[in-house]
Image 1 (spheres, rainbow, N blue to C red):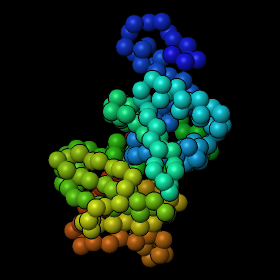
Image 2 (cartoon, rainbow, N blue to C red):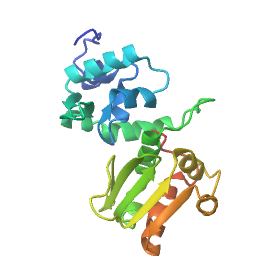
Image 3 (spheres, rainbow, N blue to C red):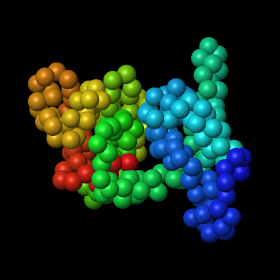
Length: 224
């Protein structure tokens, strides 16, 4: 168990907490749900965690089989952290935890990172509604691209570019995306200001718009 303390309880809940119950562990998993990240990317997405603590959590989660390290070949020479199949099985648990936790009081400071925001869209979208929004979409947020695939009422989001031209594409920055999802600005106003662009045919753009905004209508229920 490395340096982690065990509850010494054979219950599955206790055994699960032995693995992912340390502070920051679940947030590390959350930030890897959309795809692999480098150490510095994880550090930048987890305000408040120290490099030493993050290194410790990555080591523990790797030892437990939740994460694995992958080295990119030269000339990149970059170490990536990614979820194992067992680690990825935490996704529905984290989405449900996010829905449950969104009912708790929000902290006075802080804002959703891009991973949390996109997971909120996924967690908050009703499967019946999702069934009407089928398609392949691409979100370009600042310098990063996210592939959004909606099929059979389910949503899959990954940190990747579309392998072929998507049905529709959204291009914006994180601040604008937050403002749109929080209803501080309308999509039309964001487009008029030039901070947000939508490309594709009208029907696909409408589906993308519904995909983006439907989970944020009414009280937020999915701040993962």
